[in-house]
Length: 374
Image 1 (cartoon, one colour):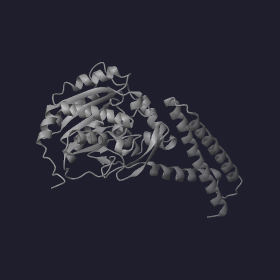
Image 2: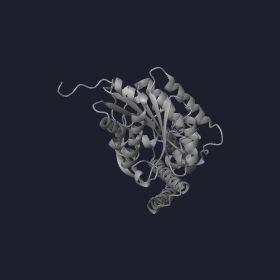
Image 3: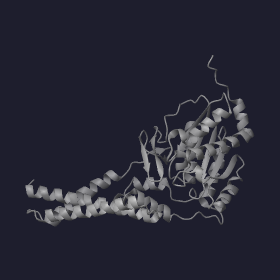
Image 4: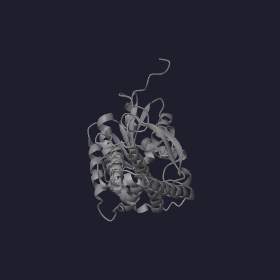
């Protein structure tokens, strides 16, 4: 390759990379505007990044225009942009990780969550794409499936402080010497329909005796969720293209902000279909005892009442709550339980177990584990 053409290609590549990073900085500013989060630090960092990218792009263009080349500059620009953005977009498309037909996080991964409004926390996924270690093929105690969104996953919490693990410790302390295994089937961003689909898959795969379905009132009846995002991110689509250009965060925030307000003036299709599927799960032979736990806030009383009235019509499902968390029960984002909030929720669920006659009979039928002396 002639030296002039090589240098033209390099400067064009720098210009393309600068354009992409500049657009992503714009995306972060857009996300902050949609969320009305005008924290100075992140906005200033995005603005500086955008300015630096504009400067780098201008310098690259100036140097590129001064290089003599037999190939027209516009042709070099088009070829470089096609190569750069084409390969980058192909790498951006994310393969789906499915558990019984439902998208989960990528299996067998680990990392640290960093958020400006939540404490950093380490996480890892098992071979099914759920948070935590591998689960035993044959549990030596009562198996409990805990299903929900990021509140169950444990955003902002260490694994030991998640709802599933806190509930497991509560039950072990309350019902000695029986053993319990709580499975964390939380997927951040899921809605009620995805929760129920995960519960169906979890029942088929793991045969839990008890299931706790955590419903985050206010966003679990919204049509858009992580499943929609995962499908759009795995194929060529407007969603994946916009996420590639502006970054995943602003596009996700925009879709969530534009999602329809839950309908509570009549039958809600999402709630009706989910309730029917829940009833079918509970009615199966050897199906789990299902507890539906509503977590609300002070602004969601109407939706709380709407969901509770529908679930209370299901004969084989115990409805708990809504529980309104106090400020001390929440992390700084005012949306996810703190370790204290997890303990409060686990106590509420455990007390509901203790009052339930079906659960008490299940405990009575559980064989006691062998003592250490044996």
